[in-house]
Length: 285
Image 1 (cartoon, rainbow, N blue to C red):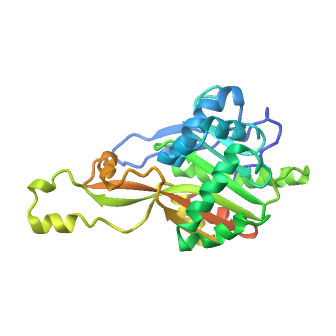
Image 2 (image 1 turned 45 degrees about the horizontal axis):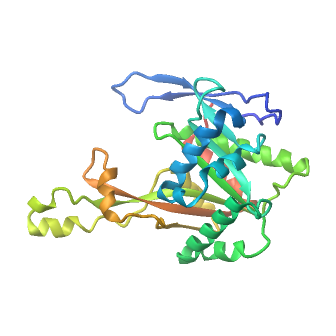
Image 3 (image 1 turned 135 degrees about the vertical axis):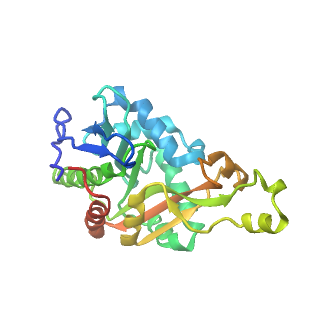
């Protein structure tokens, strides 16, 4: 179990040790992941880069510096995960922003407009579009990690977030949400076009179909959406088409087409969803 984090920025949580032994033929690598509160003078560039990665090509639509500054303005809400001490770049982060509380900030206006437009583009996200036009207290959850960071860090990060929100509400801070909205990423596999000129006509026709199955960059999202009021994927505004999928091939035949993803969870169900994530991925010990 991960202990509740003390809200004093100088007091850090107990950091678990995670073994990376995915390949039986490789040596086991023990890595100590440490959890830290946000520090503006240390984390600005690292958080900015991770948010850019999270929003993919659509990060160009927002002022990334303003997003990073807003995240870092909440030192007792959310976490960074690091390996080589507090004065290094984050390998992962998770935080939550109150869209209603910050509604007059230009970057939050841009984010809210973007979320609303994407919600209207998918029937499965219709409840979100209606919610944003009301006075609901929606907490926007932003979470990202480097590609080689193990998924086991996700459950402790979410658990600590719940603890921190509870402490903030006790202190009369604006974190009493009615809903949690998680922005994330999914992808579909798209057939490669690289070698189709030499492929037989019948095989070429079959190969171009690709797959309609949705895959998750963050495995925890598959669990979270089971508890969702609404969930769905959407195409990026700056999407450059399926032709770019080949540029994201990594030792496989199929290309990768990323999409944005949103998961809306009622506040009463969020803790249960986080518990399910821990059971699925295994919380770090």
